[in-house]
Image 1: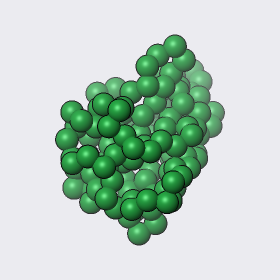
Image 2: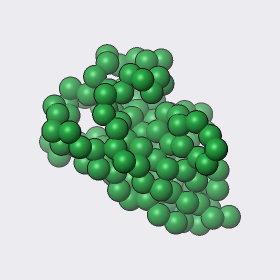
Image 3: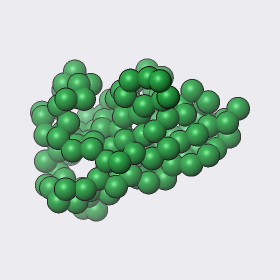
Image 4: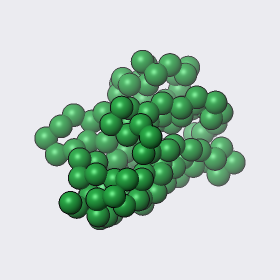
Length: 126
């Protein structure tokens, strides 16, 4: 099983980045996918997730209206388009896969995720 996140980097405040996560080794279309982030000195937390067939999406309040999650089951990939980036978005971003039924309460629980990627660093300068 592998989740390979990419697309992180250094961007100025107000800029955009697109994160991608390539999955392999499991039945991708049977898993909800989430993007989590961990800023220095803070807990890792869910910022967005998408259901198996893309009919459900969730965004945490800090990113609502700025970030958009999407997935392509044919390519075993999930993406996170991040616009209007702020310095407080600086963090390591992780993609993760969960086999639970679509339920944002469950998907906010890190322990419900079966697989995790290695993380990609996003740094937003002011």
